[in-house]
Amino acid sequence: MKRIEYITQGTCSKLISVAVDEQEVIQEVSFLGGCNGNLQGICKLVTGQKVDDVIRKLDGIRCGAKPTSCPDQLCQALKQLKSE
Image 1 (cartoon, helix red, strand yellow):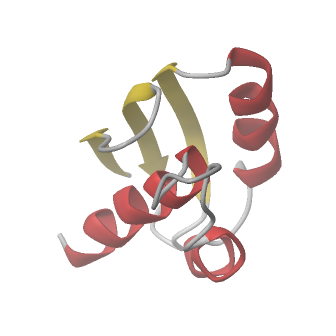
Image 2 (tube, helix red, strand yellow; image 1 turned 135 degrees about the vertical axis):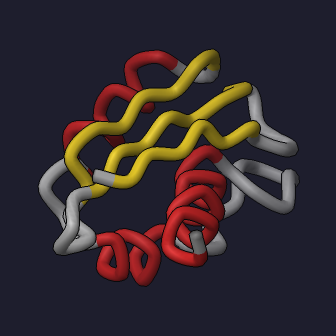
């Protein structure tokens, strides 16, 4: 199992914790801060999904005028986790 604690940039959430198994399937996701209900939903939706599938679907999503979002930051965390 690989894990990462990713400090977010440009979002209301401050930290994302992710655990991925040997087949690159997301096992656990949690956010610190941010929009609690929306982030709980994202966590439930991506748990059990392949890392590459989540990156393909959520990478580049913006929040209003911000250049990033919590889903986009999750993708950045997953990309970093894959490169480790």
